[in-house]
Length: 286
Image (cartoon, rainbow, N blue to C red; front, side, top):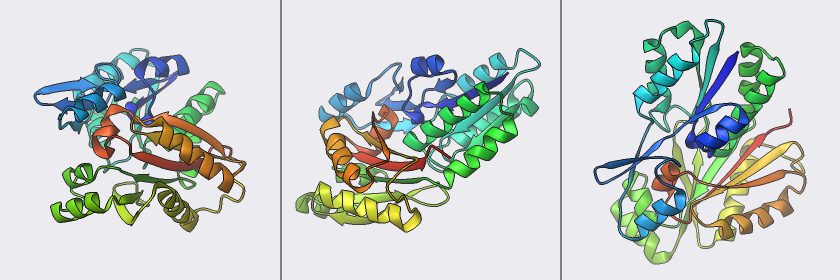
């Protein structure tokens, strides 16, 4: 059997993952001297509540021993293999850590770590596609070839509502953060082609103008037409109303696209802050 492994960057809890036929290893959030596993120890709403009371969280990858233990458990049957579809290398140390744990596990030749080059919605789509293909009898090579084609059709962007989170992440300096907050600007950042980092591509005065900027950036790479065959993922930082507003806006642009709203996992709220919204697209019907 081929076991599919991923992480909570997929916005799927470990319990939900088991129901769907794969394993989701929690990313972690640190507040003070305490670490919390995504979904298991802290929910998105609980994290936002702590932030609003002054907490300054940071994020980290899953504990390496947790991934190593999982690999070894799944390799107990000598006929089984593991495909770990990781958050994009460069966005987290998770991919590098998974490669290290592969080398340390009981049989490295039966563990395959795949760099998704993405995160959140598109990563979720890739994991779900892998599970579906595995269950239909596809080989490991067929699955990874399909994932390679999927990632060519993806685009990711995000806007944030609190410049403090951009400043902590090193994406803006203190002066820019102060100016941005004073002018109530909405910065838009885009995931680069290699899937390794996010770069700010513009600032807008309103959320609707941020949506328009995101649409512009998507169309630089992809011709969605009416959106048929694509899924648009809107993932929010504890602000479902802003995601609903985005869904209504983008539905007019790509009326045949499937639109899915998700809540960001705690680890990503650490980076985007309360009220942030990611808008991502990937072709899910190849």
